[in-house]
Amino acid sequence: MSAHRRGKPGPTRLRSFLTSALWLASGSALMFGLAQLPSYLDTVLFFSTALRNLTLGLMHFGAGVLQLGGALLLLGLVSLSLVLLIGGVVRGVKAFMAAPARPTRSKKQPRALVRRRQPATSYLLQSR
Image (tube, rainbow, N blue to C red; front, side, top):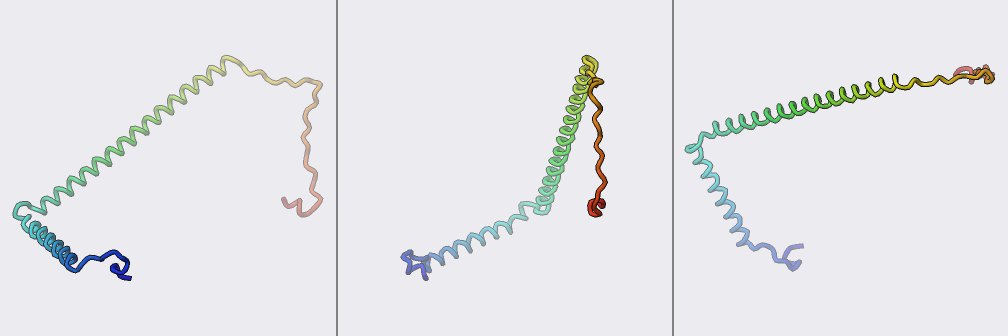
């Protein structure tokens, strides 16, 4: 179905031709300007400098991330050592302060008997 039949008029040929000519003129002017650029600027040096700066920036960023990771690792190890030291002191103080009472078995209570398993009567139960 064409755009004209739906009630919405489509672009006219003149408008399409003018848009095409405007795009062609803009592209040509931009290309001409870029062709004049090497007389004002050494493009190879420009791109090599840009790549060098990008590479150095990424290297600095990577080194910074590695240093931050190392600092966080050291901070974690220091925290762990402090927790272990404090926990050891607390456990040591608890060990020396109160001796745990041993449960005494009265002579009236018989020892708990260990029940032994009965031998299996079936071949299938013996294979377990």
